[in-house]
Length: 120
Image 1 (tube, rainbow, N blue to C red):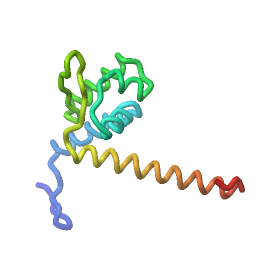
Image 2 (cartoon, helix red, strand yellow; image 1 turned 60 degrees about the vertical axis):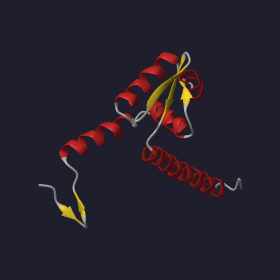
Image 3 (cartoon, rainbow, N blue to C red; image 1 turned 135 degrees about the vertical axis):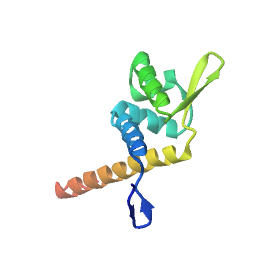
């Protein structure tokens, strides 16, 4: 039975397993970079491969895994396959995580510059 703490019921084992699987997919720097790129707008695999600095077959495999997990979708545009994220919550999640870590990194870099007297 799910426990209710603070007004929130614990998720089922199935939901936790699915969430762990989705987060596991995002544990890859390349897949996270792809998600970041797609959170900015749709793109084809060639452009994504250029953007993340990966080989086309490798990027295609990563996209296939993300698509299988339901994190990204694709559509045909002529001869190209265009990938996108159609869930605004997924876009928000990716943007918040990357944004927070970027801000922390910039803050840490600024502190190090001040500590070493290099200003900014």
